[in-house]
Length: 602
Image (cartoon, rainbow, N blue to C red; front, side, top):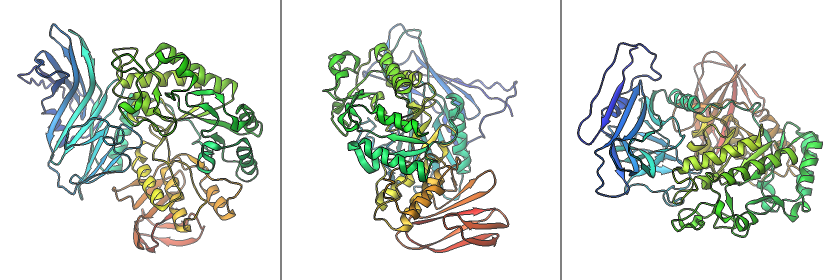
């Protein structure tokens, strides 16, 4: 293929394009009509103050194939505070019933539905986190995908997130693609390299895979192997967990299911939010005794930490108020003034990742937990607040993305080879900095939550095994749900291809449910690929067998159809029943409501 370089310099008047076809290079992505529309778009700059001339601000777009690396240069004689850069504003020519999917800044937010009716899969970024967006628009962050009926998918995504955040503002028939520059001042002669924008189209799974591979190229990180497995204290004991409860479950794990490697103390050990090395009374004043017992039994100690936040009565805030993100007056900024204030002991104050002493604090905190406490796995929660908007940083030239990433880089230095799980985190800013990523909201023992969280996770299957290991949250196999609903939940966890952590009190689990938990181990490490957003039929290509996942999300029995890849021997994964040899279409007749089937096809 021929290389085509497009250099668009916007200076308020003209657009110049240079086509150089003398050098041959493999284009990273196939041609796309939407990419052509983006090439023809005219960028514009929005400043903090109305009436400020942008005529000397040049936005340049360098296209190679379906990837663009924009940058902006101030060719004037005075600094300009740039709020955002509109890379493109294009008219969409899709039908209203076109399936929509969008990622979000916050892990607990996603967008699905259709072009005519976008729907939140989790929390609303506008209502819950108070992230600004244009009136009448649906906002997405990092990625937006369109899948017209019976047509290929088209995905527009930002393939990097080093300094700036890429956003999408969607209206019924238009799409605005924006780089948020946070009102930073661009000095005369200064150039900002922005984030790469890309387009991928074709088969839905392949298009998402292309996006994941490109992101991984910008933010390389080797995957920790094997996929982590373990037990989590939160969903059976919450913040009041005791040493005895942990050790009693450790006894069961050591005897009955030793494949659960990491024993995760999930909250409840600290004396205050922010004082992570000061342990509370629940563990006899010293959680280290429990961590030591875990290691002595041959398992790996894992611990929950929310490093970026602190409550106002914490020692870290009382001693170092200058370490925290500030308001315009130079006082610590209470998070509830600009966003959700936190779920316990709030409103939270937020540690500033650009502050050198905060970076030293993070590094020492995690080195202590690793070297002295023996922890080899860290679940980081409330990471979103590390990239909180609306405040001032110690480094006045840093974006909130840089503040978060610098803090995370310090945490990584302290944690060494420890596994880092991101939770409640900003997804795009976390690229390259975490080993695992929570892919859904908190699990709960209800059918509504099982189905909702399964949809959230399975829509993010494209990330698993490419960017990190997805964490579909804990497996819950005790409670008052039906056998069909528990099997649906377990099948969704299996189909995620990600981490498996039990969230039950294993001293009370029934033998049949313990058997189901065992069958989830080791994790597949390969996520199911789905043809469309209905998420009814997914396939997983494992080393020696293909797995078919069939989900009935409905409240009534359904017949689900598998298109087999040839002449296959089918076995029911959960029951072990031999279903015989089949080819062509295999029907799962009258699949019960709220149930799923998992079949081996060999």
